[in-house]
Length: 66
Image 1 (cartoon, one colour):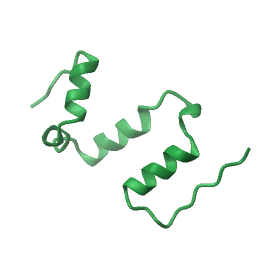
Image 2: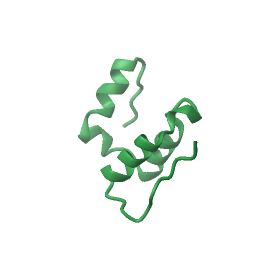
Image 3: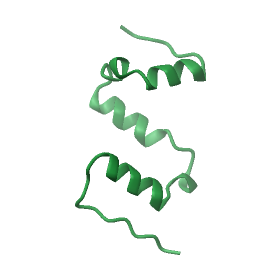
């Protein structure tokens, strides 16, 4: 089953639906994750710490250089 998302609302509905998300492969998820942010300013210490926390990654530490 291939779905076509044509609007932001349809994309967000898909993204928020666990059943639909479960249709994505691990490679699909990695591709989306690696492409979704606009640029380097989106990557912050806070964001990375939240992502690591959400996934229970405790073996990595984020340092910020100012």
